[in-house]
Amino acid sequence: MDLAQKVILSKRRIREWCEHWNYDVYVSFSGGNDSLCLTHLVRQVYPKCPLVFVDTGNEWPEIRRFVKSQENVIVLQPKMHFKEVIEKYGYPVVSKRVSRFVQDLRGDPERNPATRHLRLTGMTQAGDYCPNLKLPEKWLFLVDAPFKISDRCCSILKEGPLDKYAKETGRKPITGEMANDSQARRWAYLQTGCNAFDQKVPRSRPLGFWTNQDILRYIKENNLSYCDEVYGEIVETDGLLSCTKASHTGCVFCGFGAQRDKHDRLEQLKIQHPKMWEYGMHKLGMAEVTLFTDRQIALNSR
Image 1 (cartoon, one colour):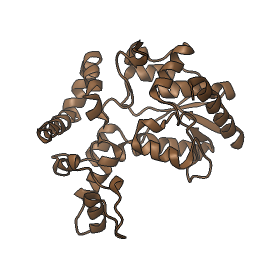
Image 2 (image 1 turned 90 degrees about the horizontal axis):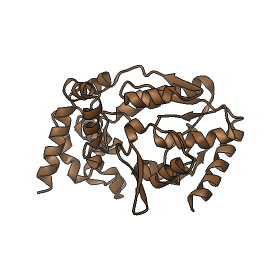
Image 3 (image 1 turned 90 degrees about the vertical axis):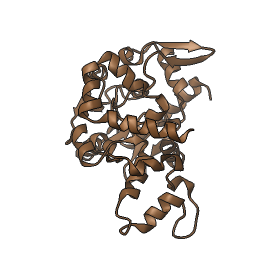
């Protein structure tokens, strides 16, 4: 489908979701470009739809200001700070999946031998080979990392407050997740499609079949005001759109995907907010995490 066709289908899915829940819905709003496009589409169907933002304390200051400049925004606060989460559970490294598997392998080997075997070999107790349940060999070095590693960060800082809000209000979430964001999101989308009415936690993903190019194209075609202090300009080269600064926002000290963006996010933070960068790298210990991971990746690539 071209973008115009995707817009029509997304609005149809949004309307179906809103009508099914009698408009007791909300947009999970991060201030990023994905949720900006989502909000623009949703409010063509439901103009008064609330935006719900979780202020983790780990956001770009510019993103926080941008979020609070929007209409009808509800700001939630998590029970724990990022510093408390990494001290108690560990750092988010590489991806949720990798961090979860590393955590499993670091547990007591006598307690969960079947889980350890699965993470190391991909073989289930029934004898089936499931490569997606195995820790890739290139990340095995993380099992011996001199710091804690965990996938709990997102669930505590973002998902927890949103789940609590949904339970208290009865509102059902509309998110800007896209299948091409990650393997986990692609799998989730393929299981349910855009509107997961019957899940334990119902969720709408009306942009599930969009791409990053669709997002940038939609912003340009509709002249949407976005957080250009973080993203920079949207430019076109050989028919492809890109941002001159950050390609994604999210939590500034999140290690998920850092190996792909070559720490560009941290480098940009160092330029725009040197004191914040200094705090994260040295007070929060991100320097140790990035140096250890980069060193091991370099050694393994030889």
